Each structure stands twice: as structure tokens, then as C-alpha cells.
Image (tube, rainbow, N blue to C red; front, side, top):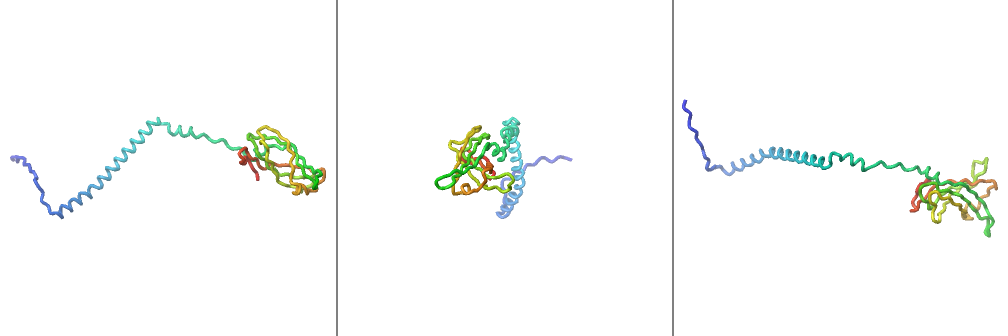
Length: 198
């Protein structure tokens, strides 16, 4: 059987109705949507992989190690009770002396700052007690603004004068009553509380 010679056809023009052409173009646009989505996905994936690779190369593979090294663990803060205990009241004495307007109370204290901070003001609770008695003769709060503050390791002796018209000046306790003093708050050089149990 003889082979037929090749025949080439050249389309010079396409005659379509306008409505048919519009319908054809709409179908073509809709058919191209999945192809465009696939193309966008592949390009995004390639860019993401390339970016991750460049970042890893720049950091030398040690990003996690560097981050962990830059954030050391914070040392635990000392408990407030422990700080207050380091500010030691080594001796305390209460006395009443005669004054022109009546008895004038005096509180004599010796203290040592065993903390690692300067203290500008100290707060206390004073209890005047006698042996064998469960109820104190007096229990009052008081504080003292320390002139110049008290630096770590320093010791001081204070003679405080509570208001003679307060409970300190009205207390009727025997001469053998003992003054017990508890530290309840310490303020630092900036006036902010270092530790408190109040």
C-alpha cells in the first residue's frame, strides 16, 4: 500500500461567533486555575526550603545552643523570713522615765545588719512579756528611719522615744517584764521593701 504524502495545513484565520468565543475563553480560564494553584504551591515550597537552608548555613547549625546559652537560669531569691532573720536584734530594753508631762517611754535596741543590702528603715513588733504569763502586757508595732542607713555588717545602738500618749506611755507592766522585738520589714536604700512579713 502506497504511503500518502504528508499534508500540512496552515490555519490562516478562525471564524467564531462572538458568544462562542466568550464561552471558549471562560472555559480556558477555569481550566487554568488548578494549574496556577499547583504552580504557586511548588514555588512556595521551593522558596521555604531554600530559606531554611540558607538560615541553617548562616547560623552554622548552632541556633538552639546559642539561644540556650544566652538565657542562664536565674539564682533563686532568698526567702523574706531568712532575710529578716539576718537583721538581728541583739538586745532590747523598755523603760519608763519621769518627764514633765508624765512617764516618757524609751526603747533601747542593739541591732546588726547581717543582710547583703543597706537598710534605710526597719519595722518591728515589740512585745512586753513576763515569765509565766501567756498574754503580753503590751504588743505594738513601731519603726525607725535610720539616719545614713545601716550598711551590711554594721552594728548600731538606738534609743527610741515612742509617743508618751500612746500605748507605750500608758502600759503598766512589772519591772521584771522583758521586751521581745521581732523584725517585720526592711526597706532598702531606695525606700522599697527588701523583705516583709507584714
